[in-house]
Image 1 (cartoon, rainbow, N blue to C red):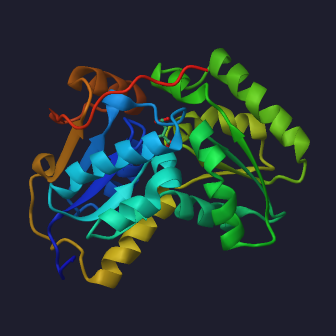
Image 2: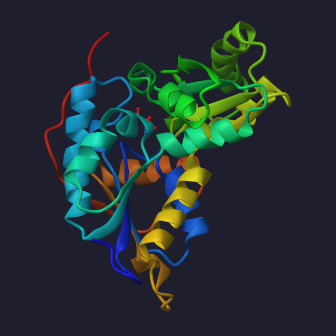
Length: 283
Ligand code: DGL
């Protein structure tokens, strides 16, 4: 149970580096909160993997975070949230916030036409989690979703703008926009896509609001901490020791990709071992 004035960390999970977009928003909004981030880089990407594998990997990763004495868990990974949120809640003795509901709330608040597009990984799209959550937030909303499997590898390779990024994005987005000309909101349903926001906004134009779940997830965490009386006490702290980052993969590779994507050198990254590395399914 979270306790009043709880100085324990917030645990943040992602399949890899992408969840740092959510961590950055949490740290901006809640600067006094210590965090521990885990990226399951040894088994990333989760997007193309079967649902039961994503569930297993997520639970194994979450077990490690729970062993770090966290007061709250954030599933920053859309695919893990879409596939495993209920299982994680069943396992966890601390509250769990996923990114799908906050993303759906952001989209429902942004749309005027009630036509929303969602782009995400194959796993997230297959789960149907976003259409269900958006319709729950506003039952009158039409949702069109599209899996964009090329975007995560492209972003991880550091291709975040320019001709190649634009042509890959156009190939996904233009047919989507043409299929629903009333679409006025595009939800970025994957941790990596906010890194491509610039070219995405240029392609969809002013008519379409581009939203993601990072900001609304941080708000949901803040509300929950307030409801539980579990904000960290405002004690003077050393920034570096307040925020731990761990990976199941190679530490140097993690730091290289994180630096490429976020332009920021991370503090010491811890290497941890969990579960068994499994090959990706072949098409
Ligand atoms: N973190 C994943 C998500 O938000 C993207 C990367 C992956 O496929 O593992 O869906």
